[in-house]
Length: 248
Image 1 (spheres, rainbow, N blue to C red):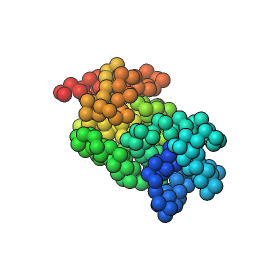
Image 2 (cartoon, helix red, strand yellow; image 1 turned 60 degrees about the vertical axis):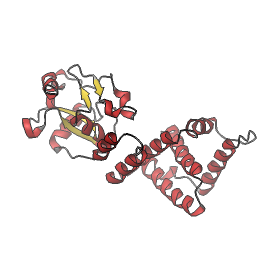
Image 3 (tube, rainbow, N blue to C red; image 1 turned 180 degrees about the horizontal axis):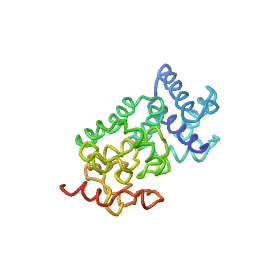
């Protein structure tokens, strides 16, 4: 957790540094980053003004290749990774802010961030991502599935319970089926893609991703198997998975 905090804090600071903000804008960013650190990592991890200025100074020294400065090798690696790849930096910052905004209950702002970060990608992809929003599953169905899937997304492994949803393989509106075999626990964005058949799960529980998502973070899951319940009686129904895609 400590290493993740340091890395994500430096990513947020690098974003501030590379934007070359004015003093007033930097002050607003500092307050935002303090809030992010508080929500994601706890009050004790909120950076002080001194720490903020030191880290920004370190980034400047790295940028100017000042070898006499005392900065962590990790900071050098992060700088080299993102200084010439601002698109990836924007997406990473949006991802960090996204987790923060989810915890704050501001899902709409989160998806606005994601849409802004991806605005230069294909229009079709943007429309899909714009539609991704937090959806509320049926509470008893979700509660039972959370227990079965050990409170983690079957695709990503995410354990952030606030964004985990109960996805029906065959829609409840069509099947009226709330059996565990007709459900899978998925992160909110994965749930939307699954319902739209843009991310599929085969009868062998292997993930495939539609070509419209090429170049996004979702392609890394293609070809992998989902995390499955330990009990065979609670596995997703192979027959229902087959029927889901039968008419495509």
